[in-house]
Image (cartoon, rainbow, N blue to C red):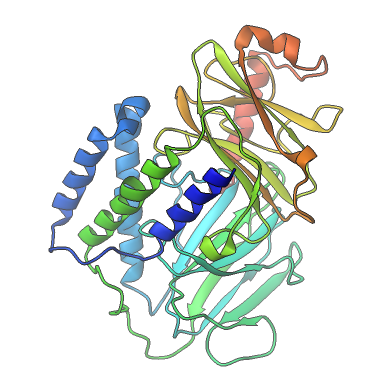
Length: 401
């Protein structure tokens, strides 16, 4: 547990600055070529294969260029989100709709919208741009804790002169807002509509104080953050062992009130990793898999994630989730998407109290043929038609809302 926490702290600290020291000017084509050459030589490429590696590289470039475009319009900010499901760096959670807006700490902003019925709505203020930095969480706003209810219109103000209502000062170094809509039940919950506007007149279109102004700089920065810093460190996480849940460090980018578990898995074709965890009282609880590049597999075609609402809960109040390469015929299968090794990430958001030892997950490496003897007799089984029905439900993923 201590080693895992040290790795996480180092990861976030390494990405706190938006860009590394200034480098010689480079072309966009050169930055992309260097990225592709580095990916081809990385150990993840052999484990992930050429198709996943190419998708990941394209995702890095696409994310960096989208962010660069946002950075050209700091006078008229907007919440940007990606609709794609392939190759996105950072283990995007299929249960979330993420949207980010770029800000400056001297600005004044109004955020407004209408709350959907999804499980949680949070807004984080970061000191670094997403994708090209792992910014510190300067503070987070749990809008539900502020009294917001599903179906209600809302507005809040960030920066500028103090005012009545939901007003929050912007701390020095604020650079981005990360909006997170978390879903438990994809088929029933609805999304929120949220917008942002800048209120201080005469704001410049580009913040000249932020170095690395070219599109090539953004691609190079994303490459450094994920491939130079992040992946080499999480590669050191234990394999097929789950550390105890840890509280997110809000000083290092974590979401306040969240606890999480992060580990690696490695499986042979005839093996399964059985993860057992208690259904908690959190407002949101979920588990997902990631490929060797720390990218979520295509979550429409593969059941690579499950929330508490989606999973079958046994009579003892626990979920037994089976990670394997082959379909074991149980409802709680986590499909590794053909990747024999990768990552496991578990989240608990909106906990009324820290998790107890009894609520911590456990992992057991088994042969697939041993599963029937280990699983309870009440375990929900599914046939081919049942699996097809599960996958059909995944077409309602939050990202499509």
